[in-house]
Length: 378
Image (cartoon, rainbow, N blue to C red; front, side, top):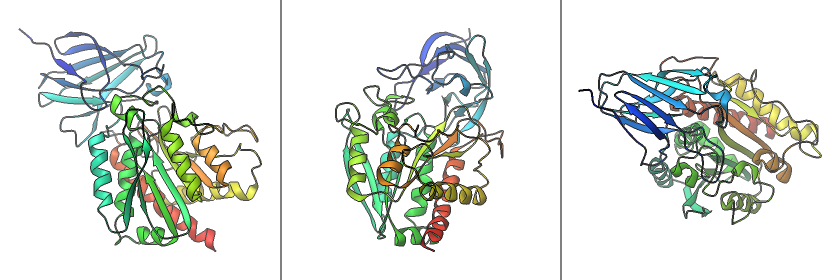
């Protein structure tokens, strides 16, 4: 008699609902973020399927947050939770069903929307960085669930640079990027780190939304707030994460800021800027365009062909981080987006866009920042 596989999600960032299991096949659905209609992130474990072809159908995706994210998307899979490859996946737009097929070698396989970045790994990242020479740590505030908002600081320069990630917790690419960035910034043998720490004071917030991360949310915090729509009027009751970070920025000022994200539909890494903010001058916006051009020239992982439509003059949404920071501080600010799908510029059939790509792009971004600063000082 063929036994049924077991599917579990009772762990950090787990998210799936099991509708039915029949042997090595299952019908599944994604649980919505708490007090929210957003759903797209999934992460679950399948056991008892060594050598058997799994057929996993995730249903009801027509009303997911970004239905455009499913065509040409292959699920992430791992058997050791270190190497994350891709499983053959096919999306049926008529039924709204993603079918994942995979034959594991071992009895346990893990499936996710993108390679997960657990809170335990986050704490390891923060603790290891805080041990490095010249790095300090502070807690900017606490979340609704009582989790700390960690900030790592380094450098002695007068230009305040803010790097922050995972406002949207299911965009785990962002914290993989942070791991790559901190690998560079904490290595004083690296000329990029030495230059940045000489010219700048860097404030690094690897995870702005630890509650949503742990709960397995795509886009919101514990009470269902989309943090990247809270920057104009954040409150302690609804968005303490944004309030804490914006207050800290008010204390230091901001010269350069990068908000790190992932995009469901576009198969590329790109930047979004602040072209629609009130009173924007050519000189102010030139900071963004110059950085974008430098990064495009330096990085094979980055491009400018694909991206978001630009806001018309005076029509920027100031509740979003990049536009609010650019407007509030007259800073060069930007949103970095990375794909869930494969990168159309340099596809990788085994891994698609991967944690390794996120880390490599972080190194490119910091190298571009050095060049950008040198031009700014000229």
